[in-house]
Image (cartoon, rainbow, N blue to C red; front, side, top):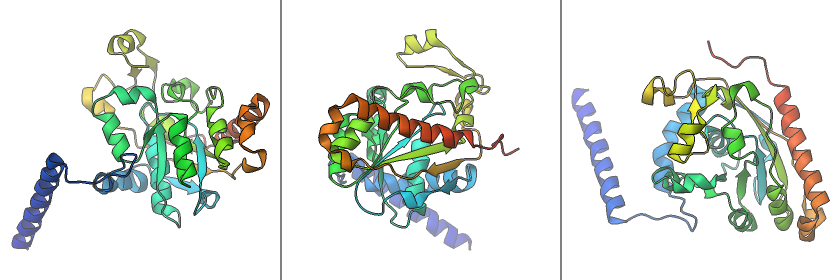
Length: 282
């Protein structure tokens, strides 16, 4: 048994060494958007652990996510760090019958972070620009948008599960231009992963960040304070809202854009309002 353990450890070390050497030499492939299958496989066990064991994510309504063709998922955003997008993508990759890849959009300021942005891109995420989403949807892929943006992830704990304003409805214009159905997604549990008690705005300005979170554990515990709390999660995929019947020209009609944006927003908020009183595991 000891010899077997040593053999397994040797092969793991060798595989790791080969992986690093291939990366240094540039001997790896990505899709046109930077998605790297090797990095996804490397991260899959960690995401699986968070999804199945740590947060014990419960999922409802996956049948509303199309097995083929385009779809624009629209979700609430919260939790200081974007674990919600990762868990939505994991739900579709692991529990959807079609095991589809979903492309999360991420905020522009993440593009300025030297290590975070490349990791996001290699995992299949894309900068949150309309042209990126339109191109992917025209290729019949799944895209997830977070219209609350930084107002969502930087939300104080006292304001949890109250949706921030949805911007100017850019996500609706993207759906109308491509005829993609809008699929509202309500995520419960992410608000508790990093209960944000305050925003240290002077520090945020100094570090050129949109917010600097003060939680019960960060920055008090240093790096340990970045470990998310093991809250219980529930992700609900709501029935799709069709857009193809409006036609692409409707993207320039502010009344239609506003109406559809409010319909998505009210659907998500109503679902969030049905959440249980507590999601703490202890």
